[in-house]
Image (cartoon, rainbow over all chains, first blue to last red; front, top):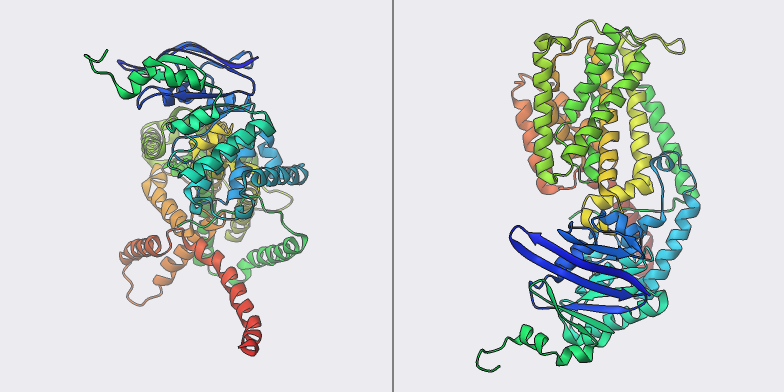
Length: 256
Length: 344
């Protein structure tokens, strides 16, 4: 059963067509990779789907509902959460507070609750428990009281995923989750992403440049170039696809 | 570097009680101020401090959500004009008018915020400054607002619970109650989930948005609450002076608010109090120097601002609030000393 359907998604920046009629479908519990050379439109696709940018044309359907052009927070509250390419944290807060901040959607507390202190204590302990569970799963429990900006890069990326996961979304979109990591960190992050899918049943759409990670993680891969989809299939099919090889390595005129 | 923000700490019963005791003692001392401060000059300065605290606290609340408004003085003025017009032209009850002054200021903030908050950071700041300038021009131009000469004969607040207003001491108590309520609300917000979310939006609105925070709604409400208290302060100010002129809400007020906020520290809920009290203390203390030239005052303020910005970029609040930690550390060291000595 497909959880997210993207039909004919197009985004123009002035005269530049960054995204050209992208079609995409991702099934419940699947890990789908979105790859392509620099400037292919991967990040644009992410920004449009998650509501940071309004599409010029096309349709995004999530869990059977049309979410095209909705506000980001609205989309997040429906269970579709994203992470960011560059590390985005509340760097002056502790690791634990970052996760608690991510729990925003589970803490529907209005201004009047704030002023008069209605039913906050009970809710608070429940959220603290959830945060602890998540930090343990991510292996950040021992660092939970450190200032998040002081964490090593790998842990910061992991915490970024943790913030997205804390609201227990149905689907997360990871924008280059292993970027800037060494081989060891990459391997452990890959294992973590697999574990997240296994334990929480989260559907995952990811953009990544690290081919080893993409091939190792994804069941399906979509390749973009100049905003257009040029190939779609299993990692094995993609590896042998001539259009993909051309896009990445280029092709000499006489060699064809 | 900013201090690590305290987010959702569970307050233990023991700490809560000691805090409560300290708060009550401070409140009693504040209520006794008129028995110590008998000169009308000093009482006037204290009253000025109290409504300034309201203005700065409102400004700081919006700033904590990243809403850098350069128009607190305009909302101060909106409150003052609303009250002045209601009580002088329509003979409304003072308390109702004062409440409405706050509500009108908040409603204006909602409209201004909805239109201007699509701009970010400094662009929003500049556009609010433009709003403030336009408003002052309107007050100066239209005879409905009394033009340059403003509105005169604003009466004292109506008696309430048998308490008559008019004397300086009565105004002091009114200002004190208003300021205490303001700070109480600010404290509650700071400790709540709502305040926590505001502090998330401040440094990283995009991340907050991705976790489902309606950034626009939170920014506007924070801005509105801040402006509500600015409006109430304005209503008080109008009656306290008895007359208002447009120039009372010009940029010099904004400069003072910014100065107090920065020196007090924008990351602490108590920052506005520290900023206002310390800076007013300095400027008032200076006047006791023999042959004091009042032109030196602004220079001293400027130098203080530069020193604080360079040495304590988080403001005085960071310095003051680290002192208990240092003391605890120092006393722990002392306790450990004999042990260390015997073992070595």
